Image (cartoon, rainbow, N blue to C red; front, side, top):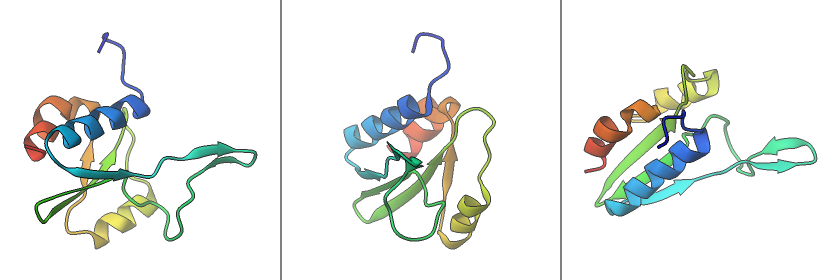
Length: 102
């Protein structure tokens, strides 16, 4: 990067690119701007993790955060029902995320 903070979109793209490079299948539900504001057309409970990645029988759920953002109530509720939820920031990209996706 150029020394400027990563946007959430840039961070998401970087994690997806690394995961695909390492052979993971990846899904991400992107919100879209509508006349009623931002919407993510997915049915079910709010707060689902940003990324779901799978490879060789292993499934990873990851929530991506920028800055000092914390899990929202709905995201915390999902975390309580998942075997593991990784919460990553751009600072985790080079070491932590790279190691998990290795």
